[in-house]
Length: 105
Image 1 (cartoon, rainbow, N blue to C red):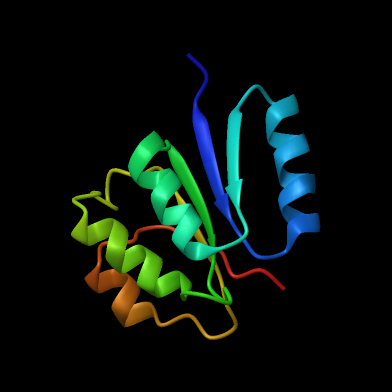
Image 2: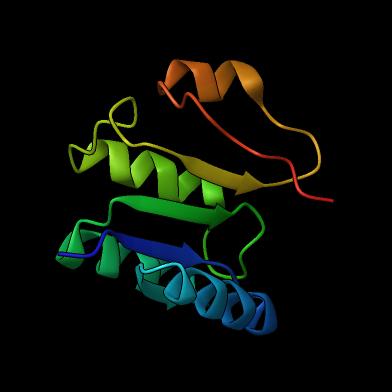
């Protein structure tokens, strides 16, 4: 069974590039350009990795992380969460046990 990755980013072009790259690497990839759709996919598919944009039009990346945590997702056991933002709220990320994040330009 292929590891599955969920991309939640409102940049459709970026999602397409990431999907193509990750599929070529042997991953199953799901993507959502809206945060609420991403949360639904996360609940249904239990992805191995979630890449989350911080600035989504319908719900913030931090709110998505809060929702995942409230649904029982152990963010410490998740291999990686990527949150795209300008000023990372590091104390909050530590508080919710998010261990890895990337700041994208």
